[in-house]
Image (cartoon, rainbow, N blue to C red; front, side, top):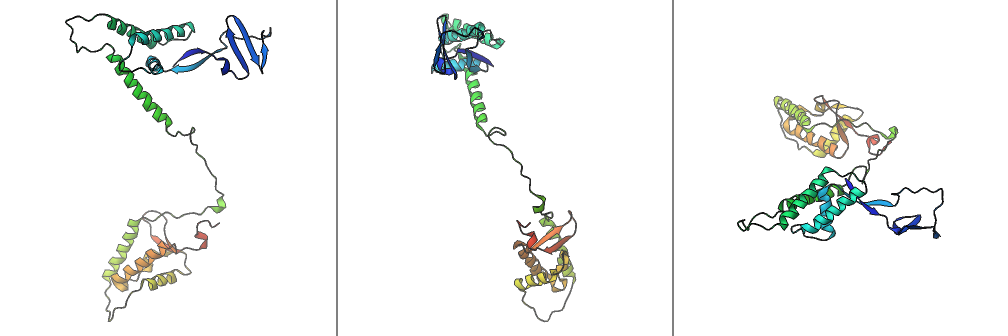
Length: 286
């Protein structure tokens, strides 16, 4: 990155307005004029030099010169641009700035293009011959696309610049241990085992009783009353056959949906247990 040297304006200073007029130096400090500096005040020779523009390379400098004059990048006045570019290069040399070799290479390329533009073309040369500026224009357009992409990326929200992470410590008294979630496939596997047992059980029934989901929900809650954890399979009566097992399963699902019951499994592939939730399990309970 090479900065372009610009002499500071009189209005660019905050506490002291400084103006250069010939060899005389005048200053205003808090509105009071000073025609002479204090004898013990030392000002470095480059104290009033600031840098307002920075260039990432020779292509960046060329784009700056083209945009400053609102020129068409596809029809660059190569003579004017070369002259302005060389003036910047010479100014950087005078300011004792370290010039990268690529700046000098670009200067040589501009001079070559300028000379090719000035030289008359042979009569035998094809009229459709490539413009000497074509390669430079291609590089400038490609660099401009990268600049626009970099600008869009820089506008995206960035961690530690546009937003920051935060951490909140929750008092341990309000923490509630949540049992691991039971996978649906394991619930269905347990139900399948109960159905298989129900198919093996043969019972003679004289009459068929209607199975009520509400009554079965009440029956399940009565079985869980006074017990902390009940094995999932013990809530089913295989003597009722498949219809009874299905109604009991639906009753359990409905009670889980209404947050009355919850399924607990100590670890994967372990036995599933059912327990009734109490007031202490409600969200927000201490």
